[in-house]
Amino acid sequence: MLQRTINCPQCGKKVTWDAVSPWRPFCSERCKINDLAQWAQESYRIPIAESESESEQPNNNEPA
Ligand SMILES: [Zn+2]
Image 1 (cartoon, rainbow, N blue to C red):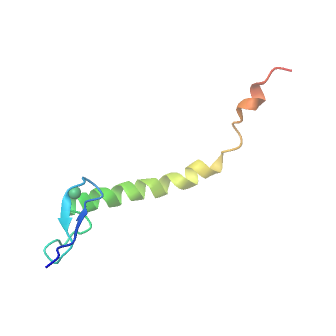
Image 2: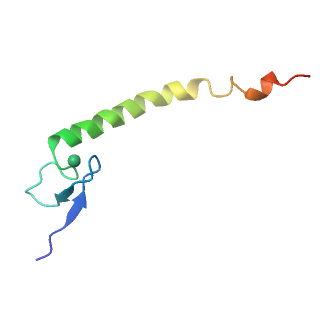
Image 3: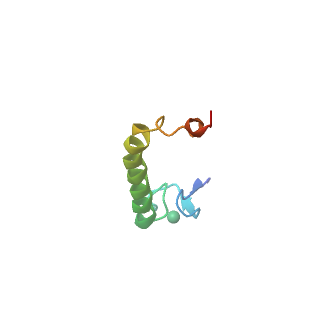
């Protein structure tokens, strides 16, 4: 019988894709929480990065 395994997105550890791995695709609750925390931080950064992207052009310092 084939056993499907994947790699944990957090640590790369092999995870059995079955009921024995309640945290799949992560190997453990810890990896799942770490991934969610990273994802939340990324989504918080987006509005900040979008606000002033064109006000700092390096071309403005070009001497006449
Ligand atoms: Zn892991």
